[in-house]
Length: 373
Image: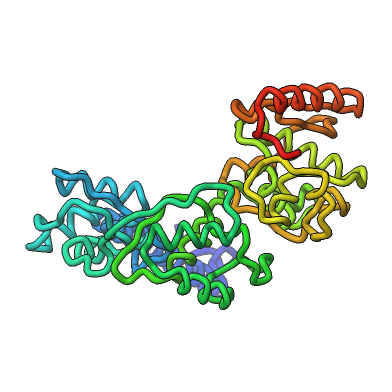
């Protein structure tokens, strides 16, 4: 047998080159796959290790003030939990790390402190150790339903800051942080609540704190989105809330009063709310006389159709929520038939209204001096 290959079956040089080229390409591709796979695994592993060792902490310096109460006898673990719940500190790990790195950690004292949300844990701890002007010196409460001038009186008494300072600050409404839709009109935007004073508190900073709380509540109840659904401006919804605050005080009545207001506005009826007259005439009672209801003030909803020009009080959260989310119903009238209990009845027709109006008149006759005449 010949040892020579048949010339017809010998591979051509070109075919050998192609074959070798494919082999090299396969080796290169395999090497690339191995290299990429190795990098991918390395990247994931190193990322996991980095994440595993990372301490979740805020970058600071923080925003939006919050008052923190540290009870007497609180351990550092308890204090850390309070700060995390208030979103001052991001994690237990960050707080524990700050405590370990700060020799004076045990010197934190009980009390109230004005802090910022989303602080670095070490910054939060150091503020508690050296609070300076952040330590709360006193607190004051502003009740719901007061007009702006009455709020100023309460503020001056509760804060010991001069009344004239508040009046001067109100002349510069741009400094108060009011929402754009307020158009620099502060009436109704100083939210009624309990507030804390520090050594550096001023008339302006105190009212800024109240406006900030209004914004927080308005955001929580989605006031602006609700206003859009109701085809009203946020300012109009606030104005309606201010009327609700003055008209009724029972939880079950607020959303129904809101519906009465929206229904009357839809039918182009005068609102005829005594609360708007008491604001117009600067009265202190809850009912009005025929003479008072003839007031020419634009706030008199007995004389003029539509909403008054603006809020007539500073409403609380419940009234704001009722105005933003009115009850469903066809009521056009309501009467508080008992001023002591706040019992309020609703009607859809004039005839039904006359019945409950007479019930209120009977109450007034039995309680001499309680109703305007």
